[in-house]
Length: 356
Image (tube, one colour):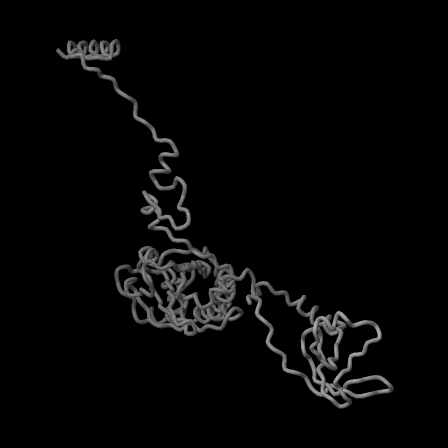
């Protein structure tokens, strides 16, 4: 029976291939699936021409860009973290009396809420405050680093893996030792910012639950620096998070390409120009008299005419350089020459600003 059904199905398929209709006379054409081209895909996603000026985005682009945020690159902050690595290597060697190597994995920008959700637990979260900036930062120390510090400071043997008992709260001894480590790192962070601007980072509190360490809005941008600390066969990770709102008071300094950068200024040329100004020659004009004459009288002047100046010996006149009044002087004589003696400087009006 099954063979007969197979034969009937095969015959039916052959008939369809022959005339494109079934036994009822209804067309049975099957159209192939249509594939969208790139232009149609871009139009669907809202990427066809891009928003122009104040045009609002549409389509799927609004959904896709909802999770994105554009971050401003801060070149000087990378130099600060590099300086932190060098300072921490020395201070942690003195703190642990062990060979400590500090390295930086990467510096990334992300949303504060995304970072809180990605913190591997158990860990200790230290909230600290930047006194001069009046804002907060976050330091996260993972469990491997916590047990390594406890092991090193309490004289644990080298070569033995630290015993980790998960699921229990950290003891008072562990928290106290970690707080000492945090104090050392915050002092090093303050020293790293010293060439840029003076700032004091003060330890506020220690948390183990990320929900209690919310120092910024979840959607706000932040800079995260991941540090790796190796103490021979022990070590762990430490992460420093600084919200952009915390760095806002020194944003202009962090945007510099190098330390001490001055936009649009060159100290070498400033010094050279100041030195050359001392040897510059200028012409001074002594204004003996000023008279108002009719244009017809001025045009009628000819060689031999005299203009009487109403200035006698001992009168006060002005000494000018172009249109700028410089000094007040007294008229006199010296060896058949009219001379003036400078009595004092005149107050000059302020120069107009470039925008006026």
